[in-house]
Amino acid sequence: TLDRVTCLLLGSEIAQNRSDAKEGVARAQAAERLLKRWPYRSELLELNTVLFLAAAYQDAGRLPEASATFEQAAVRLTALGRDDTQRASALFNNWGITLTVDGRPLDAERVLGRALAISRDNQGEQTVSPMLLVNYARSLQDLQRLQEADDYAGRGYAKGLQTGDNMVIGQALLLRASIYRGLGDLERS
Image (cartoon, rainbow, N blue to C red; front, side):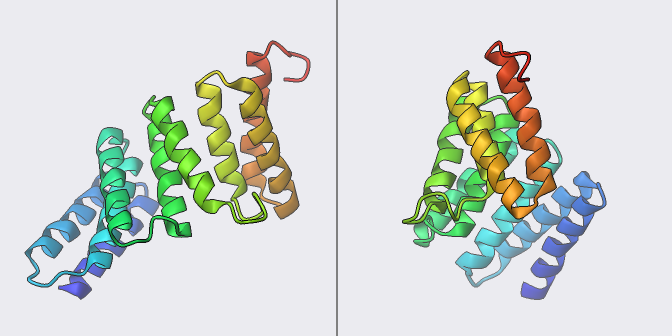
């Protein structure tokens, strides 16, 4: 059963990588059903399965289902005492992206803010992913908190430059251009 669940989860990931979102969801759902019938419990495997399923729903554009499934995963992480780990930060980041795309900016800001709080260490934002800063900035922009959004996007951009992460750099620049338009600073945009 464990091998089959693992194969189904990996198959879900492979299907998503091949742009076959429907098959990705089907395989993750099959893994979840199989695990529910198994007479033994593995809370970590159940958590992994829920995370794979949430990602599959997100990839398939099934945003309400993805959000509900990410929420289930967050509850499971808390129950396991792992809601302050980097894995939790990644979960909240992915959930926040889902909420942003689903047009739920208040919820997205709250969830992404939690990811930020987890990622920060005693030295501030040194350990925070630059993409998380940009994602959080996007949620602030959606809430029309444009000055704050610019600040976070700028910090994400600076970290992207430091790490040479072209994806972050591009996303931050596009976001900042949009923020500046919103602020009426067309020349800077």
